[in-house]
Amino acid sequence: MANYNVSGLITLAELSKLKKNSWCVYILKCSDSTYYTGITNNVERRIQQHNTNKGAKYTKGRGPFSLVYQENCKNRAEASRKEYEIKKLSLAGKNSLINAYK
Image 1 (cartoon, rainbow, N blue to C red):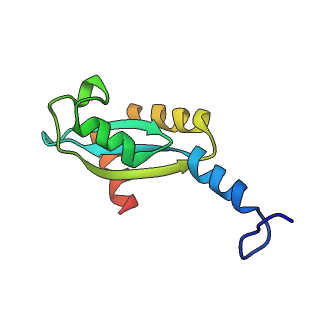
Image 2 (image 1 turned 45 degrees about the horizontal axis):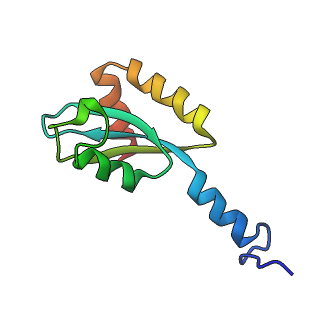
């Protein structure tokens, strides 16, 4: 018999797999007040990489960072599409998105 969560709709193993493999798009505010947009399946790990200069080339020397926006996506492809849309936004558009998130 499988272990089920309280609702009984999904097994705990399936729930765990969903958490580990869920992708998101995120925006970091750099110490120089610029924004960096990226995707990951582990936000905490990725921010730590940015803070230790092991993240993206753009973020090297721009830390510390603050997470100002995060949006969960169904899969990596959706996260990449959303990242592309955000990167096309003007600064005002990014600020509006971030303010709506707060």
